Length: 195
Image 1 (cartoon, rainbow, N blue to C red):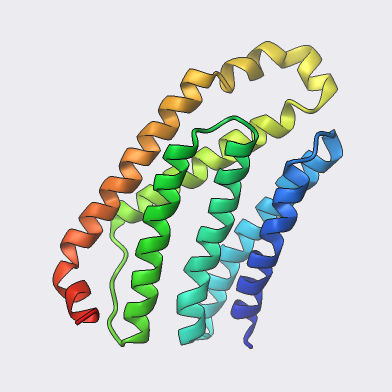
Image 2: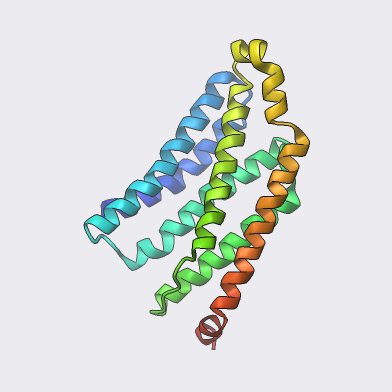
């Protein structure tokens, strides 16, 4: 197994470890969870760079690399639901859309058909990742006593439930709409895949 694929496996393995530490209630565990999430996210960038630079592109990697990304992202979203910060119904729609599209793309690659990722889909991913980093970082910082004693009001404002709710709603709408656009643009190809 080439290095990019090993990094993909590592990202999948790190996801439950990240979730475990994030759901703890002490400062150190929260900080460890954030560090693990950052490392896991960096492996996504690095394995993609390696695959392109050294042509380490395999059918296995083309399917599992984006799926590993979705597993990590889904783990972060669901953890925030468990912590009472996000609404389950919105997160469920986001995860469902992302996994459906990822599986269809993986099956298309397996059948020798390639679906390109649109700029809109890339922006969707950017908004999701930015939002997750934002919420995770602020959440972790709220478990630092010194910062809470001095900046607690600011953190409360940054994690205002209405702000988080409507931000998640916007991301949900963008995610679902980008999925609709993707399916519409590739409808003929998708139909042929399952004939």
